[in-house]
Length: 271
Image (tube, rainbow, N blue to C red; front, side):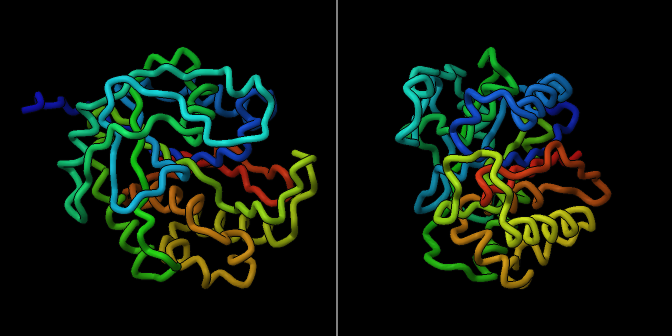
């Protein structure tokens, strides 16, 4: 039986647009915003990342005590594959997550580690890798977009609120607009596509107004939606983040901008 975890002040919730793995080694306004954020936030007891890169049949959390760094990308400079992020795991908080969620079974897994949706971000925020980290997977067993499925993820995520009271910093890591088929890979500073800007601005407006309904049913935001979100893997971590916004909680943007023409790097903090 695991020990009772004491409650502390409620931690904020983050959504981080992580973009290209090259951000691991780049020094730009985006990575500088992450460094600044890590210094300003209250120090977490643990960090849970809902990762765009851990898609599973069902929902899992990592219960490992020791974590491996996963290089879930290819064709990048050797330097990226030599970097490690050796943070400890957090079996205790992973166990608490399994107990907190009633919408669906959340199971323990020891078969994963930290993919770049996690460590590419945390390397800038907490470079010492001395805070326990665990990931939560996204159930991707639904094979197509449907409002019922989006609401399912939103409702499941809302049950994670208890973790905030136990010192867990919850981070959804994905991208609001993320279209790799139209990416300008050679130019990180390429002018963003009009459709990417339009969709990103619509999402921004809905975030500021607290209109979660349209964010959940994002295809209702116009024809730019299907271009900006051709697959759900990078969009769903944002849904997990907004589901944790309590009534009256402020939302502020940490970073705004685009990379490679088709990727929104928008990041925000709740609480």
